[in-house]
Image: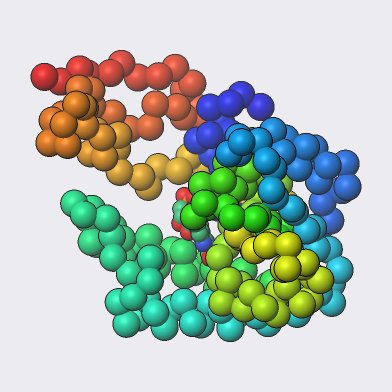
Length: 234
Ligand SMILES: Cc1cc2nc3c(=O)[nH]c(=O)nc-3n(C[C@H](O)[C@H](O)[C@H](O)COP(=O)(O)O)c2cc1C
């Protein structure tokens, strides 16, 4: 797959088919992921693949409880999802949250059908910085295999139970960074177009100064792979 197609279309896919993800596919995904940068190349990461239906069922119960907690925070204006970034359109944020809730509800209701969970652990992930490159590589490599999924944090509400269920050697310092649901998507991949454009979120040399070029629409599309002309602005 061409790299831009992967970068532009690796969406979070929450509606998955129950078909198993073959072991060789899983191996290729993780083999790509462990190439990711990490501080000092200490590689203090560990990936636990879960495909046991009973365990998936158990995690589904926790997932639903965790979501309820997160949406309660959201309802009361707390947590990372509650407010859009400064300068962002509040109406667009409401719409985004509505869509995420819709597909998240589907995932929660059909959790038992998810064929593969991938728990990602790290020792001192530096606030995520030391593990997110690898997690993003998992999702990109999965995309190249036609496998989709979503990175979730809701099980962080139940770290102790997750550690217990997976037998995590916590004394060594392992801590869950994220849990990914993975499988073959029911829907189609599309460009993540619901992003504020580059010129709204970037500047040059000084916070208030223009970035220097406007990017009114994504520079890659599945139909026309030629980038549109860029208009430099003063
Ligand atoms: C740190 C982080 C945590 C996330 N946690 C969740 C989550 O718990 N549940 C979920 O459904 N999506 C989660 N997501 C996915 C985001 O909701 C998603 O990337 C965003 O809505 C944009 O969707 P798109 O990538 O499909 O365009 C998370 C993403 C990140 C980077």
